[in-house]
Image (cartoon, rainbow over the protein chains, first blue to last red):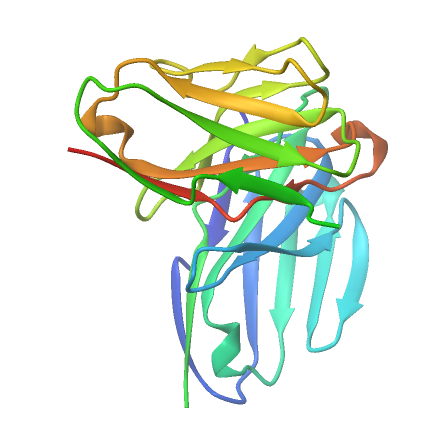
Length: 109
Length: 114
């Protein structure tokens, strides 16, 4: 099956700092989503981004499908950004999302 | 619009007991999924369904059964619970993922098997 690797596994930031989270995948995909799992366990959709660049407030994401990676940018981080960020992909021809192991982000005041 | 709703939210079972987790979605999605999340890991697919009356195995199907009798509901059953099934279970739904669409998740069910 497809391999999805996220880096870094853990990240600690001072409030106000910027960060870049990376997702590498081992095969062609036709669907990619970024999720934020908050400290209460809820999975929140951030981006649906199989290719190109999208922005939503302080967050933006870029996927380069031909090079098999996606990046999530968080600017001016806030304590509410803390949690685990997951990348999930749909391998070409498949019917389901395959998740990476996530990046745990801790933003300290 | 409730989205994806899971019941119950928490449950403690004794080894060998059975239970059913219910997932309901009100978005008219064809596809529905059950995932489990273990500490420090991403979500792993248990079973999924691409339409009413259909089910298929995912990565970790052993010990679970599913049914999709109605389009809006997807049931996950544990016939004889084991401590290894202690986990957080997430349900999701979507239109066919090949059609430029995204999946939406329920709030999760925390299951402990003692």
